[in-house]
Structure formats: C-alpha cells, structure tokens
Image (cartoon, rainbow, N blue to C red; front, top):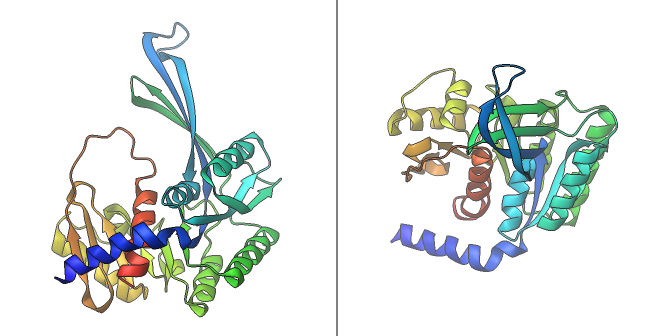
Length: 298
C-alpha cells in the first residue's frame, strides 16, 4: 500500500508540480561533438582507417547535459559554470537557448577554452575521442562571480541545486562546501554526481549518485555487484560523509538506494546493448535527485 501511495505521489508530482520548480545546475559544462562517417579503406599515409565524415552533431555535455534533462522535464533551469570565449561557447549558448535553459551563470573566461569532447565514429562504433580542455581550479574572480550568481538565485527562490562534478575545476572542495552550507541554511536540497575518491567535499549533501566503480573508489574497497555488499558501502558512505541518500547505479543490476531512516531499495534494470554511455550518470542524477529524491524520499 505504501509503495502504491509513493508511486501515486511521484506521478502527481511529475504531472502537476514539476513545471513550477526552479533548479540550479552547477559544475563542469562541456560540449560533446560527434563526427559520424563511413570506413571503407586504409590510409596510404599510415596504417589507419580513413573515415569519410557524413554527419556532424553537437549536444550539451557534462553539467549542461543535466540541465538539458531537467529542461526536458519542463523545470526552470539555471546553469552555473565556466567556459572559454570562443566558437564552442557560442554553440553552447545557441543550444541552451533552444532548450530553454538560463545560462546567466555560465561565466565567460578569456583565460580558458570551452571544454569540448570530439568523438569520431565509423559504422556506429567509436574510433577515437579528442578532448579539448584546460583542467584547473577557478580563479578567485570566477568563484566570486559564480557565488554571487547563486546567492541571487537563492534570494529569488530556488527549489534545488544539482552539482555535476567532472574534476575539471569548478567543483573545488571549498566552493562545494560553501554551496552545501548556504543551501542548507535555506533548506534547499543538493544533489551531487561525484567524481574521484575524495567525497569530503560533498559532505552534507542531500543526494549523491555514484556508479559502482565510483562507490568502490570512495570506499577504498572493491566489492562484487551484489545487493548486500553494495548496500553496505552505500550505508557506510552516508554515515561517514553525512549524506542523506546514496544512490549507487549498478549497470545491468539496476540501482541501490541507502536513504534516511533506514530506507533501502534495490531496483533491478532491463539490460540493453549500447555503444555510447555518455551522459548516463547525468541522466540518473537528474531523474533521481529531482522528482523522487527531493520530494518523495526527503
């Protein structure tokens, strides 16, 4: 009966209230570019395949992918991060405008380039990935501008904050701890899509959504992809880092939630064959932190 009521609550929320939410997405904004082609011969210049490009597409990546997912759910979305002052920035702006995303918090920096990942595909298989990025913590003025932007949003009314960390520089320890602290003072839930083994910078957040590999790295322990050992690591992490809800994604095994007041859920998945998993973690973070997590499981 409880499960049915929870499902009904989530359904009503998705249908009636989600459009009223204002969500800030903070993190490493990226541009993902795909070059599709056909491979029919080997280059005479070197023993490498020749890919005749037939199509080029661009999509929002990193924190921008989280924002796009939320925008597709018809939330009011605000993005905060840093990009370069270049052509790829203009492409990001165009796509965000089309998606209905407010990018007023996307700081334009003359000291760095827009993070771009270029994937080369032949016959639907990824052949090569080229990364254009400059990794490093934000400069002091960039942090101040990002902080001021977030404070203005909070003062105008904000329903949630999503942190998308790709370890490129935006999500430093001090900045994230400030974000979590100021959000807590205003009773605003914070969801984190983590990166790396040091979870101290996420301490105190409402939700965190690691995959199994990331969970094991943070726990400094490798466990099999089975319910009990995964749940144990999630519970330990929740206690150690004072996190209300830990959701571990487990590929074909689905997800495991270690939540407040002893709440535990092991949800199976339907396995599918895929050739590109880009953005999978962002999508999980979006779906679980926002509708079910912040309103049904809080």
